[in-house]
Image (cartoon, rainbow, N blue to C red; front, top):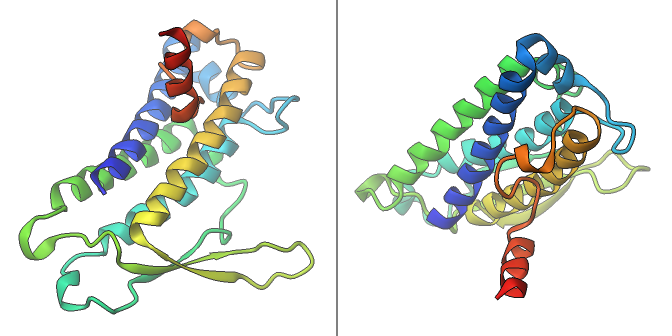
Length: 202
């Protein structure tokens, strides 16, 4: 569980670092424009990818934070995660400042989770059951519910966020004027790819 929390915290830290880089390089006004600018290669903006991935991460973090005092309810269903019930095109994908605030707020949730694990009666049970809901067919708006656990959903959201950071990386390099060397270390690269590359260099 701690490893999953560390992974999500690392991703959130990278996202915040990129926003701070945009502001330091371009100034607040131009950074805001860059945050909203659509990349013709990807067909979306940094803000859109941030908002989408954060919808998932925030939901999983909040469900995980509710998994306390679970020792008295070992077989109780904790909650539901409706990943595709999202608000598109709102402030969180257009306002860099509000997006950064959201990132910081969710970071605080994960830090709280990290201190709660194994803390006596308030411990978080990684295997607490949840149900993850998705829209998986374009010709049917009915959600499909899949049995899962708090731990599994935290892993899914980290993996999902890395995919979106890979898209953001392309936007940074081709649309908003950042170079490879300027990006946060490992930004938009899967851990498995980084590990593979290190082994190739040995």
